[in-house]
Image 1 (cartoon, rainbow, N blue to C red):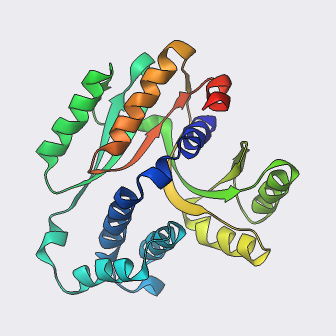
Image 2 (image 1 turned 180 degrees about the vertical axis):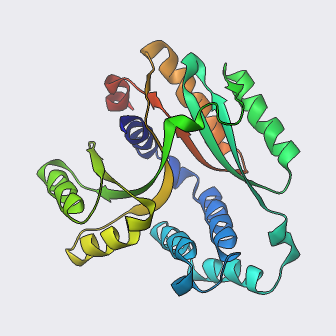
Amino acid sequence: MSGHSKWSTIKRAKGVVDAKRSKIFTRLTREVTLAARTGIDPELNPRLRLAIQKARDSNMPGDNIDRAIKKVAGGDGNVTTLDEVTYEAYGPGGVAILLEVVTENRNRTAADVKAALNKAGGSMGESGSVSWMFKTNGVLTIPAVGDEADEIALRAIDAGAEDFTVDDDAVEIYCAPGAIEEIRTILESEGVTVANSEVTQIPTAMVTVDSKLADQTIRLLEKLEDLDDVQRVSTNADFPQDLITDV
């Protein structure tokens, strides 16, 4: 799971989250809206509860969350045009990339993704070509350093987590998707601050990226993250540790 951790570390270190907050709010609004299509009551809809929690973790105003749900409750026709699509691709050096997309126009989005890949030496893959190298997991990110991070990780394991990674400024906890809420509740009851929790794709088979290709790969991932319709980018690229340190 080190690939997910390193890409997450790089994004935090480069300030990607803070620099693109308005875009993040747009993505979170889509997540809430899509989740609400299967039920507008968070108590009865686990996906909606998780989407709302994720929005709150990013300090998204409550009014924005309410409006996203009311769009569905009010039968807004624009909501039904949103499609969830997963694109599979290869990056420099053969790394695998999964793109989770929400779009109103599949042709436009596919063209944007292909253009970004082609410019960076990547290519689109067939359905199933790389998805087998990923596992759907719950991930909780907790700011912590040193011994504190190790202690939190052990607490999470006791609470039902499957695995964890620790980097310079945070610990990432991995669990079954359905266990996120329970683990988060337990940790927060013990005074642990959870910065983010989500269901995402975790690589199970890594591809080592040498220093020569690392910068090229990171530029591609950032370009893909920046596309309007892309909700989430996952990769099995295992970046050199010195690159993480120098970011």
